[in-house]
Image 1 (cartoon, one colour):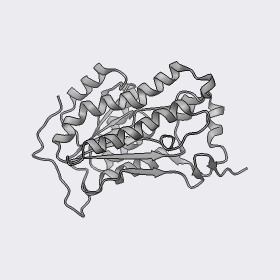
Image 2: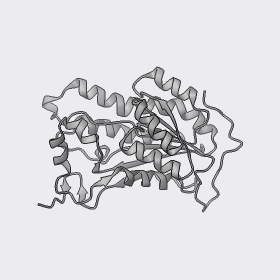
Image 3: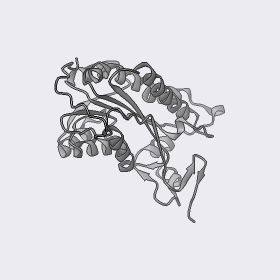
Image 4: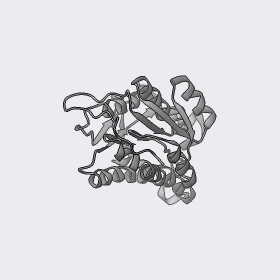
Length: 264
C-alpha cells in the first residue's frame, strides 16, 4: 500500500510557493489531452510524476519523454485501481483527470448504457482512485486532491444531460470531500474548464471528425490542454495554506456555456 513516511515532506511556509521538487504527483487519464499536458507540465515543475491510463503504449512513450513513471490504470476496474495504489510508494498530489463524454442525446432519447459509462468513468472512477490514494495523501503532510471538473458541472445545457449530470457529481464530490477533510493537511481543489480543444474529447462524444470540428468552428483561440495544465500547476504550487476551491477557466470567446463568439 502507499507509504506513510512523511518525514521528508516539503511543507510550504506561509507566503511561499510550494515547490515541485521532492513531491510526487499522480495524474489519471494521462495518455492524452489535459492529462498528458498536466503530466508534462508537472514534470517540468520538478515533480516526480506517476502517469496512469489504460493505453499503456502511449503512456510509456510520454513517461519516457518527461522522466515520469507509467502504470496501467483503469479507474472503472476496482482491481486495477488497487494494483495502481499498491505500486505507488508516495503521493503528494492526485490529479483526478480521467473522464469523458460519450453522447449528446436529449433525455427523451437517452442511451442508458452511455449514461452508465459516463457516470462510471467520471464519478465512480474518481471516487475509487481518491479513496485508494487518500491514506498516502494524508501521510504526505501536505497533500493535494485536484478534480478536473468542467463548467458542465456548474451549468446545464440541452443535449448534455449525461455529461452534465456526471460533472455535477464531480463538483459535489469535491465540495463534500473538502468539508470532510477540514482540519487535515490535504487540500481539495477543483479546476472547471469551459471550451477546451483536444484531439479526442468532442470526437469521442460526437463520433465523427466533422461534428467534432464544428464545435470549435469560428471560435478564436479556444483553450487547449496546456492552458488547463497551467492552471493546475499554478494552483498546487501555491503555499499550502492557500486552497483554490474552484477555478473556472474559459476562452475569451466563451462568455457562458451558451454564449460563444464565432467568426464567420
